[in-house]
Image (cartoon, rainbow, N blue to C red; front, side, top):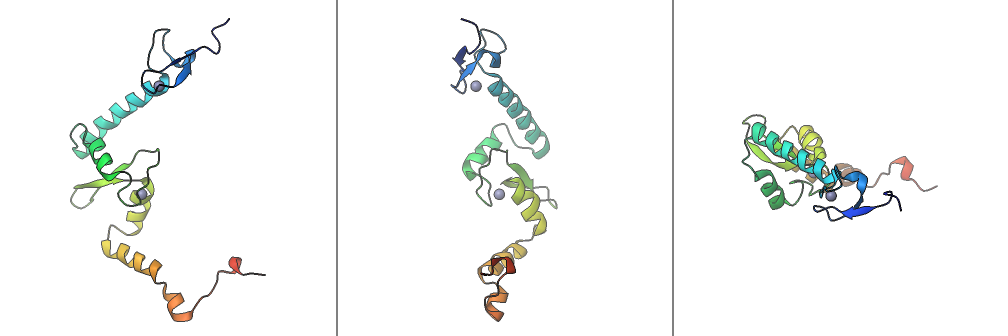
Length: 140
Ligand SMILES: [Zn+2]
Ligand SMILES: [Zn+2]
């Protein structure tokens, strides 16, 4: 028997991982988990420094929100800490799309977003002209 294919469980993620994921034969936490812990620690320090969050507050807020505060998305990618550019006040955690695109396109203006919702729910072309179809949707 060779060492190849030998696996043991990681004490953090509980997955059975092959020997090459451990730093030593006695290592108990796999490389993936070690990396995750390191990046979490760095992220924690960063949000404390930049946004003035207390230790644990990012996680606390994330749990309270349950996902992106706008679309509810729970992608694997970490949510951004969104803040008001005028006052600097932290508003919440948002996914990249909502923070970087939705709010940017709406210029952080709630009225624009309310108007956008009304637009989608009651499209003016449909109301004034009736149904007109994008040509790619036309039946032959
Ligand atoms: Zn692990
Ligand atoms: Zn979102």
